[in-house]
Each structure stands twice: as C-alpha cells, then as structure tokens.
Length: 151
Image: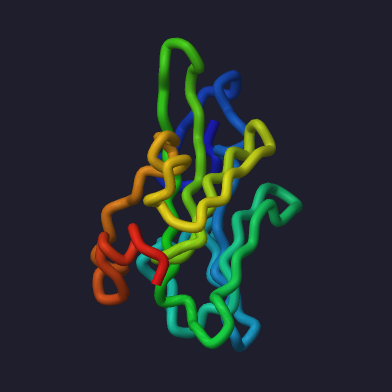
C-alpha cells in the first residue's frame, strides 16, 4: 500500500497512523506548502513561515509558530523511523526551533515530550531527542551548537 509519500510502500498490516502524517508550511501571506502534494522540506521558504504543522488525515496534530519577533529560519523537523525486536516499527517526529523548544511527537501513542533544550538531563536519556545534524538547507541558519543551547 502506498502512503502517498514518495518512496514509501508499506504492507497494509504494517501501516502505522504515523505513516500517514505529513507536514504543512503555512506562510504569512496565507499560502501553504504541503508535503502531501509533493513538496520537499528543502523548499520551505523559512523567512515567510507563519507556522509549521503536522497533519494526519483530517486533522492538525501539532502546530508550532516562530517566537515573537522571529521568523521561521530556525525551524528543525525530522521524521524518525526505527525497528526493534522488542517494540516493532515506530515513527516519531522531532519538531521545534534551533535553540529550543523542541517536541518529540509520537502519533501512534498520542503522546509528546517537550524539551527546553537538548542539553537537559531528560533529553539526554531520550533516544528520540538526539539532536539532528543540520541539513544543507538549514546550514545557513544555524549550526549544531545552536541546536544544543537555547539562544
């Protein structure tokens, strides 16, 4: 079964709710860039970002806005998939702003964890909260040091 996302074919019995979650970048002029419509993360115009959403079929499950006086240049987003013998397959989302706050969202359990910074003791003990390496499209906006400290 295809989830509607490029390159992802998942047998129907293995489909998780999180497999159907996509992102939307909502801009200050009211326009929207949607992953479901074929957009890729690198296409997000961060300097125009009003909010960033995770969307499941029919509902927004998470939405974040830039801090007052800031634009979306410090947006950080990752979809993380893992497989373990004990827990099977899981998908979580890492969402937030360079410097914090960050959210680790687990759609299949309906839970999330919020971190002020990734250097907190709690974040260090959560494998899903490991800081992502900046992608090329993020590099001009922040470094790994920015991810680790709340600026």
